[in-house]
Image (cartoon, rainbow, N blue to C red; front, side, top):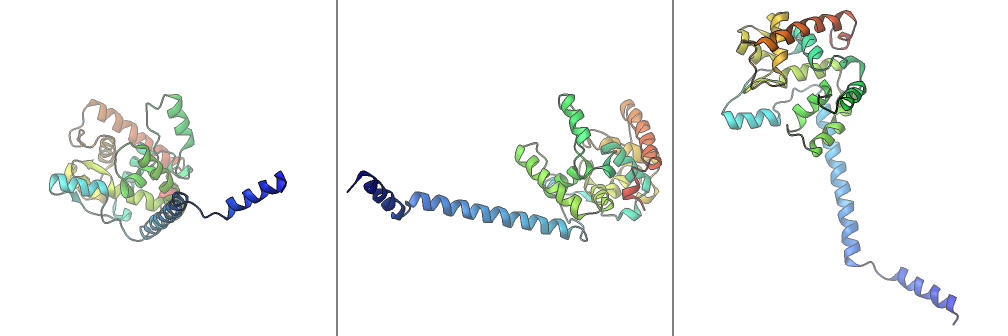
Length: 246
């Protein structure tokens, strides 16, 4: 037998040899992990679709605050029953270009990177993804899931629906979630009676709701509120509020 024929015979015997237990186990594990990830993705997409017509009954943040405090204050309110100036003001405060992007504001991201990431660049859609479907830490796992869910929300929900959900799940004070509860907590008014000034004060508490009080604003909050009143009017005039207003 020649050397070449011996080599071919050896190679053939290796191919016909059964896979080792370790290799088979690795392939089985990879296959089931892939199936699990696909099932999780499908379930998540289904939940996003369901939430186009059904209001999210609870979020992880609301659940954790309820456990911690014993109760939370929250009352879901359709966007039609909320003063339009509230939506405009909060969008102006959190994501002025909301109507112009598909979930990620690339200009804001580039500016944040240029500033050394000392300021946030999360869009309203990203915040809804985090507030409704995820938890509140800053881990890479959470950010990765947020980046996955945000395009789903933008694809399936209308811009008006995104704003509506945000207005109902955002935290405005310790244990106070949504515009309805916040309007009563701070000003003792119904959400459709909120004034531009009150809306601006409410918007200023969003970055730090546990430490700011819309009913007793300090100098910084008053200055910021004045800016937001102008910002809300600006996006109304230039059309950047058109996608969520009727």
